[in-house]
Amino acid sequence: MTNSKRHKAFDSRSELRNVLFVLPAIALFLLKRQYTGPFQGLVFSYAGNVTVSFAFYFVVLKLCMSSPQFGRVIAVAVVLVCVESFELFDGFRIMSNTYDAFDLLANVIGVGLALSLDTILGRKRQKDLETNAEG
Image 1 (cartoon, rainbow, N blue to C red):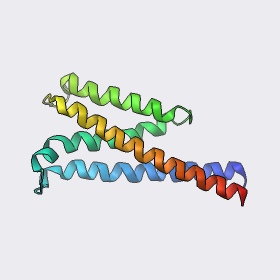
Image 2 (cartoon, rainbow, N blue to C red):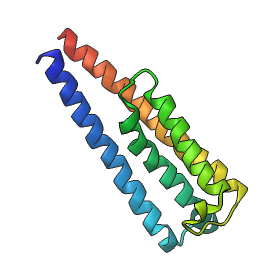
Image 3 (cartoon, rainbow, N blue to C red):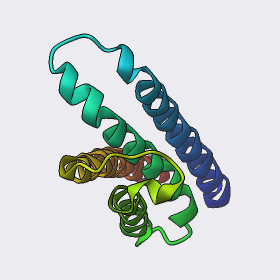
Image 4 (tube, rainbow, N blue to C red):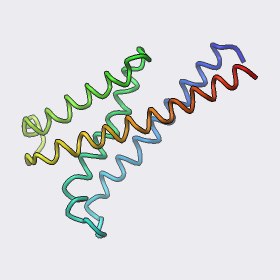
């Protein structure tokens, strides 16, 4: 397989992976009100922030990966500016939002989880590509 074909296969797998992370996050966001287990108050109050921030990272990452070196950093910055602004500016008066300082932390947790997962899987993919290129 040539480098060009390998790179295209890598890109399509990455795009599929990103979609596979966005869809469950959206489902969890929509189902959080049905949760009745431990820490129900925390889940009800903050799971939406975590899941939306997590999913939004993977959506924005696709737009920012034209610069592989800085794509993740740019994605994190864009997502945090957007979600934190949404909190601080009362949903931009488009959506209802109740300000809670812990929402800001929940947004950071969501982006942090997404970045961590993306970085770990990116290193694994890079190692796999290097192994395949050698063999």
